[in-house]
Amino acid sequence: MTTTLKKNSFLIILFSLFLMFSCNDKTDFNVYKPIDNKGWKASEKIVFEFDVTDTISSKNIFINIRNNNDYKFSNLYLITELIFPNETVVIDTLQYEMTDVTGRFLGEGFTEIKENKLFYKENKVFPISGKYMFKVRQSMRKNGEVNPIEFLKGIQDVGFSIEN
Image 1 (cartoon, rainbow, N blue to C red):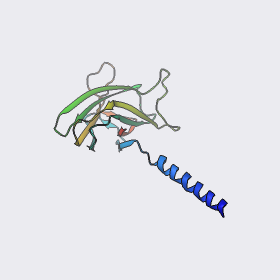
Image 2 (image 1 turned 60 degrees about the vertical axis):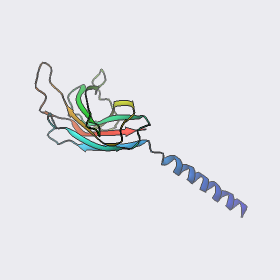
Image 3 (image 1 turned 90 degrees about the horizontal axis):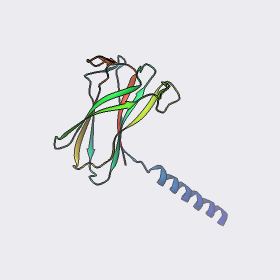
Image 4 (image 1 turned 45 degrees about the vertical axis):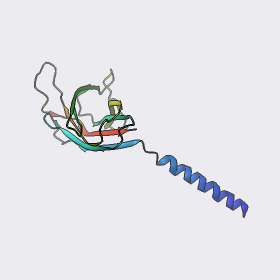
């Protein structure tokens, strides 16, 4: 009887520890939006809205890109807008490496689809609570050309995530 009670107690403790560690989610926000099969249109802004209640803790913010073998470039240029609840707008032009020096895609994934978790802001503290908006658009151009690529092929999904 005591052996059964000890086993049950051990299982309850083990199960409690499992729940405690498995529920420790460090992601505050994580949303993906699909891109049309024709490609990511140059004028198309992908929009994410999120609420901020914690104005003390620092967060890491990522732009997540899923690409496939139809993506023909070694880098990716993005223009972002972070719009605060008080309508302050922060605009950034960003450039990310998408391949290594041999032309092999970076990112995670066993198939032709690679997922890239790209730093947008590191240790960012949101100063105001309320509804924020994040907008991102591609700004890719071919060498020597002024006009953007009208439909950027190979990008399947664009995501945005905030982590503690």
